[in-house]
Image 1 (tube, rainbow, N blue to C red):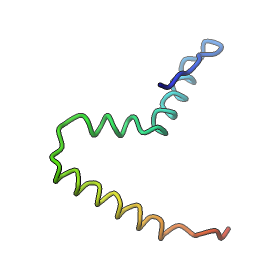
Image 2 (image 1 turned 180 degrees about the vertical axis):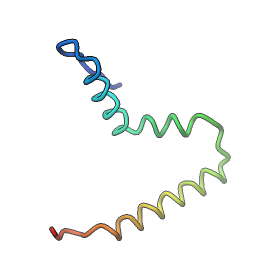
Image 3 (image 1 turned 30 degrees about the vertical axis):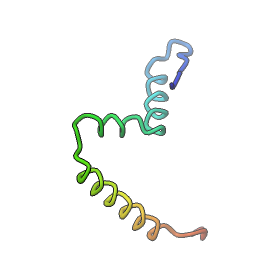
Length: 67
């Protein structure tokens, strides 16, 4: 459970922080996935595509060198 304290009546800033924390924990992604039923075959295909994207993304990043 994510908890945010509103300080100095600054609700906009607190909402911004809350949104960042929820996104970091993956809550928005889970909500999007749970919105509709996903067949096991579709889930397997989606996971495979995501893994492929992560793999290609890791190849693009420079490893340890600072340009």
